[in-house]
Length: 282
Image: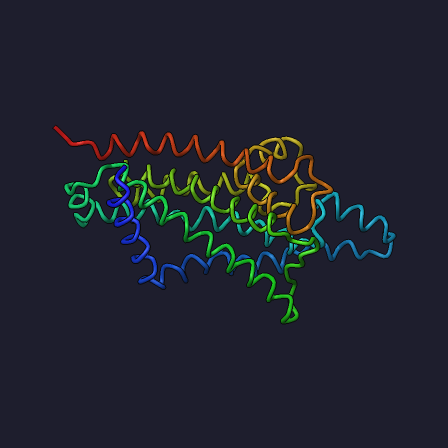
């Protein structure tokens, strides 16, 4: 990889994002709707206000179901960060397909830039955007509590190290899925095929994670799957730093190591597929 070529291509990709605010708004639309509809409507912790439960029993059930989060919306809002890390990277691969259809990628590939330069530039630019969107979602979740709705309540003291762990978790998750979707974008020719395959990956991965479901409400077999799901690993880092780690078996850095493993494996596979796709055709 040539640093000068890579940095120039990265700058171009970042400028494309900045000059397209509609894409940023679109990336925010779905998580905002989830916060306003599902997060508010499914706030099942109100059912714990039964007169037949003592305050101690309510607290025990809350901790059992939400692993230290003060309420379901707070638990859900942290999960939405994982949701953003996946959905915001979907368009990274789609942009590759459209660039192929319009001939833009062919002109770039004919330049002195190597496959590593092209892939690396799109990977970095595509991974930075979800980090910004994730913090916008967290900020909105906090603000909702100031307008009379359920909001995100941070109950732990977030240190500088904790903030760094949150950024690292979001970035690693974004890098992983951006690598995957970029590889699909470089390999697949038709946008219809791409979006069909992405949806077949996206929904099962999200629904087998702890991003949306209360952990204590999951059956044992789903908990087993969710424990190794990269989205779960990322949102658990957030929940540990936002709500405390008393109800988690490992420290945040252990979950980050798992994310690093996922990201490296996906990066290796994506690099191989991209090199094959961009190799000169005989």
